[in-house]
Amino acid sequence: MLLPSSLVGSYSQPDWLIDRAKLAGRFPPRTRAMELWKVEPELLEQAWDDATIVAIREQEKAGLDIITDGEMRRESYSNRFATALNGIDMENHGTALDRSGEPVPVPRVAGEISRKHPVQVRDVEFMRRFTDKPIKITVPGPFTMSQQAQDDHYGDLEALALAYAAAVNEEIKDLHAAGADVVQLDEPYMQARPDAARQYGLKALSRALEGVEGMTALHICFGYAALIHERPEGYSFLPELAGSAVQQISIETAQQDLDCTVLESLPDKTIILGVLDLSTHEVETPETVAARIRKALPHVDASRVIVAPDCGLKYLPRDVAFGKMKAMADGARIVREELS
Image (cartoon, rainbow, N blue to C red; front, side, top):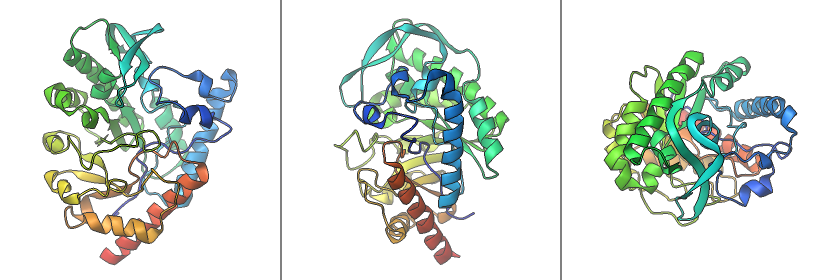
């Protein structure tokens, strides 16, 4: 399909599932934060399943073409996977600086990082049961996890990132085998810390994708708009990804009114084009979305564009998230019909 639409990953979690006031009052947790859930522990698995079905149905109702699980089971995009690995001291957290420069609790690496077991395979299998559309699942990228940890074992951040990459590589292969059409790596810290990303982040990405045969995507962003208010005009790390093995790259264009000429630096990649401004609760019209799509088309062929929000919808009220999502699908349909 020309100009298919999809979420980047997360959707707004129901108020009955998560304490949205607590969620909004802190940076995304790097360690587990079970206090955010409103449901009793013995009922959480069932609640996560139910919320995932709701997220799938709302995406389908809005008209999206590629479906995610909405990340209903996660307190943040990264902590569920990052804390499920061998080598993490779950009793004694570490501390690291967030991308805003604030110290936050993070996983403390006390031994060799490795994967205990598949972390999200059941998530993919469950999603596959409830939709016939193509599905995408997201995992935190190895470079970002290395920046969101206190390393008390390796003494070398490159070695740490490569250890995370080996674990991610195993997970990606299992997720594809379980039925995922696309596996997306979330690497916001490549934008936040571009020098380190150039030094060893690309090497870690290459290791994470080694031997992977299915479709992969990479999300690189400026952070959740609800939390990160001061944002640069453009990307500090993007053309460097042109030579990577990842096939799709997610790029924000709406909030920053990005100069889309930068898309020309990725001539062989599919662009997951961010066209929803998540810094506001105002729901865009389909015509506004269509205009944002048209702005990119002089710089990337429409056959290489997937229409998406700038970032995750996690922090938006559900009615706003649904309204924006539907406007996005409708706006993509407008341009699709023009091009047809």
